[in-house]
Image (cartoon, rainbow, N blue to C red; front, top):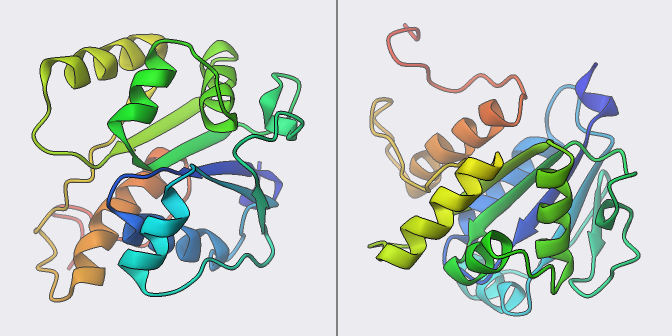
Length: 191
């Protein structure tokens, strides 16, 4: 299946780390063969944090389509949808806790629940440090349920020189986990 037939959900929650989401969106939009749709959902506080951290307002352009966090009529609120991948980036510990406990009280938690119950790809990018016991147990629960936990822990192998290059080390890892080909740094494979 080509990437242009893929539909992806990107949930952006109220954790610090909007730059990861911004760069991930840009990377998805500029792929040679971009996804057919990138459904974006902001949690209640995420938009304010986005604007504070990036210095700009969020705007969507195709293939990005924004959905409201309380819109349970969004297609991916149902297991019958054709969305196969969901990325929560950055993921707050509150969101992780609600998903791990099955609350489905907003579109983000519901869509994540759908991904898990349908055995689809759910990638969670927590941006918190340090973790407490509750955080670890919630991430364990989600891992056992089939989610992939990909902490926003940048790597330094590629010797990044800017904050954007540093955050791209995480974004490229997310892209690989989501099944997209990318030209990022690969340990001992780049000359």
